[in-house]
Image (cartoon, rainbow over the protein chains, first blue to last red):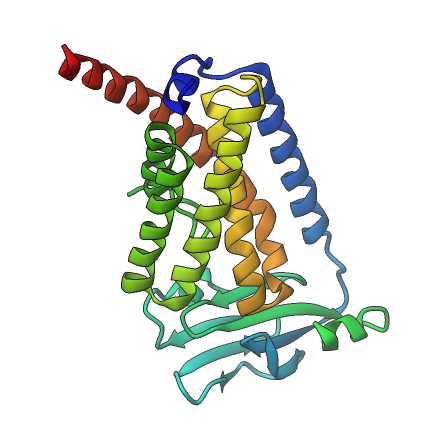
Length: 135
Length: 142
């Protein structure tokens, strides 16, 4: 039997489809809730990586907002504020990184795929400082 | 094209072409279409996008073929589409993991939710397309 007939003889959707969709969405929602579980009170550390290698790492604390240029090849400018970090300028083609806006919680990431730069926030405390450094 | 809430998430209309060619021409046709689609992504969107498209679409074509052959029609057309879309994301994320590092893991749940809806859509459209294509073929033969 050809695959074409295989598709034609199938139901449009079955109980298995519903179960599959349900399980996938439940697992995703649990993951999202788990990721957003805020470790409030901790200071935030922003880690900038290029090609997966850490190129910059700085604490977001009481300093006044500052801008930082993270790459020589392309101009990518971050704005670091007390409560989060955002990409305000990028040479890349799609501007997804700029459109992501400001990230404010540990675990959130800004990714610029064309330039291969990522910015991730970590909670800075004794427990996961090592995680923060090794990424 | 409707904007999905996840950056870089798309409806997967090009995967629809891969799915349809998999169903009409078999595994070889499906994989060829997937490879050609990846080559197109390479030309228009660069090396990273090309590699991600290649690993995603080859893997999803192969897994959809396996499921179509082996699941004894337990899944419906919608289920096949969802499996294809989720596996496509997994294939792409494997490349993204090497390029960007493990920060992409935070992206996974959002992509899976997007894939469930996009896959249900492409699955249902694919089943309609297959019915149209095979009825057109039958008319030609008469």
